[in-house]
Length: 201
Image 1 (cartoon, rainbow, N blue to C red):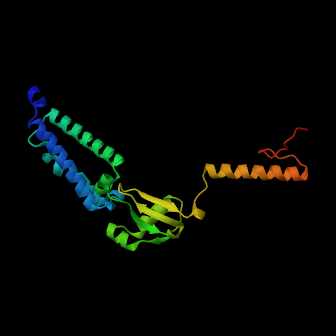
Image 2: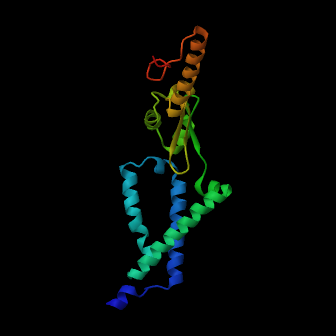
Image 3: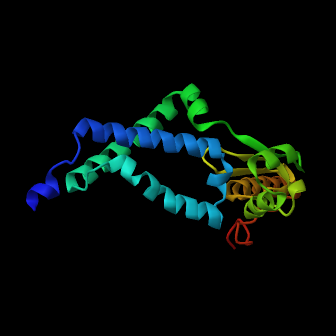
């Protein structure tokens, strides 16, 4: 029993080659399927993803059900994926070929209908992402892109963007300076942030 548990059913080199080839084939198929499958998974896409692992399982393990074979396969998958991620980070050319480029979905408040049709997306899909970023309609968006990894990035028009803590701090500083100048002109001490006088009685 212990021998069957640990003994590889196929040569180690074959195991590595099988796992690596299947990894790149799946990556290529997902690349050809388009970014839409990564950006939005419906019921059909979920079924495909679940079945895909079973379809390629035998191609990876071959006639090998050993524990060692499973560990080797998992290690090879992680190593190959780590190598691809590192290469993408240091080589823009490799990233462009392997991952693709961003697709513009909305520009200056108008849908790019051709891009939406090509990617299999609807305006309603884009509207959801715009609303998640604080916009109300497509007219509030200056630019919406679908990144190679499937992430939808929304840049709202400047007058539609919500104020962040930095904006509020900058506004507080400006108001404090204005109060100080008015107080200096009128001879009154500036007010504290709590609304009280700047001097003690």
